[in-house]
Image 1 (cartoon, rainbow, N blue to C red):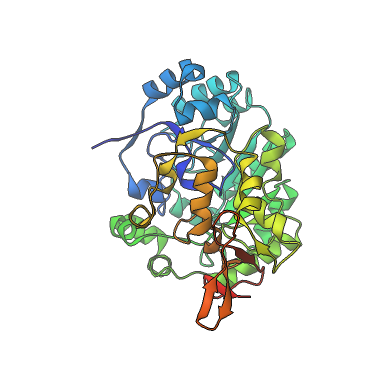
Image 2 (tube, one colour):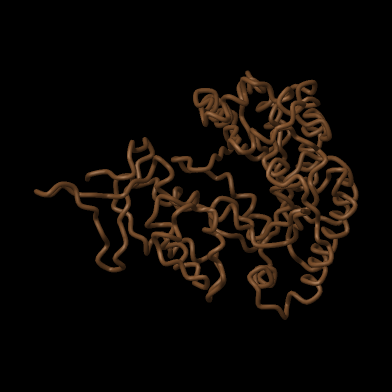
Length: 396
């Protein structure tokens, strides 16, 4: 059965990516062998009619996507399908031009491809996230047979920065077998004017591994598949890549990282309104490690970038197993209520305590450790340490 895709709230990367909306197009013909989106839903088809109806009267609608559009939050195109892939660019270009004409900002996630020159004729300075997982053109033809080779992506990055766009590069996934020595690539990124690098390990769920075709398995390689399936990480290689990037003057970001970073500065430069990210809070508390952290200070910071009022936003939590069993989650709530759920649980991927840098604070009593609760709001208190904690709870 075909899965229709459309412009919607960016449910999957709340507090991770500053864009509030996501536009997903057809299944991507770049055919990256490890692509989570193509493995999950290879039958995706873009519902152009639905989006055109939304954009025709979004000012009069009361749905969450319409309200986010009304506030002119940026749209990411796309976390799950490249707009410049052969399968997408004919629909993507006119839609991007329409969004631009409506003064709705766009962020691009891409490897490049078809129609870039046409888009550059009307796009204002924007943020472009370009994926470069290897500096080998030969290996890239194997991993991403429908996409431009890395040298072409580097040329695109240099062209974009020369035109006033901001470029961040996803070394994502960062795999030692594909990028054994990142020095040359990172140096070229810096020379091309790239602002920063988003570095993540490879991840493939067991279901995704089971869906790999024999051809895709051969392209990825059994060594890397085993690494991804076992949820093991090239930790030493990733840390070394991050350190080299910093040494070269590139801003660095990884989900859950414990240290401050200006990686998201270009987003705030180009887009008048953006969603908050957990990195904002890390940057705030990093100056005073060890302090007791309260929900109110966290929520006050996050709320300044979130829409007021109540909304049907429980879907931000929809993929979290067990959460709806143990907590009473209202369908409609304020973003502050949503933040309180994120704050007090360690089960959502947006939770601070999913990062080793944060832990719930406890104190030692005669009866053992007791979790510290803020008398004002009845919510747990947290502690931050950039060196990391070994457990979700720490005795202070």
